[in-house]
Length: 120
Image (cartoon, rainbow, N blue to C red; front, side, top):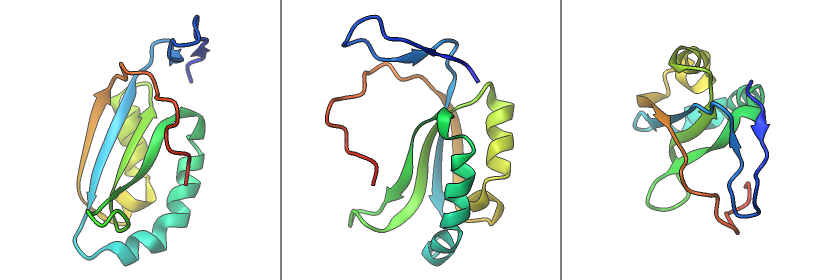
């Protein structure tokens, strides 16, 4: 794993040297909330294995702001092969929860805003 580069100024975002983030945008299959809830403990344990690499992660919600219907993860991996290998063993993916998954390289160019919502 790459080392964190310390910010030079208070308003400069902290970034990693040679950072390569991957965005995972996954949509659940219809009527799969029960499966998602059943697998959630294994999913969280799997995420814990890469906790130091996670920029952010959480469920995509329906318009009611409550019902989970997908996942958005941004994780630091060395390359696309490593990102895909990680996804192939991810519990939601292995169980066939997702209707679609998109993996894209991502570069954050905006500093994290103060007051960003805390982890739920």
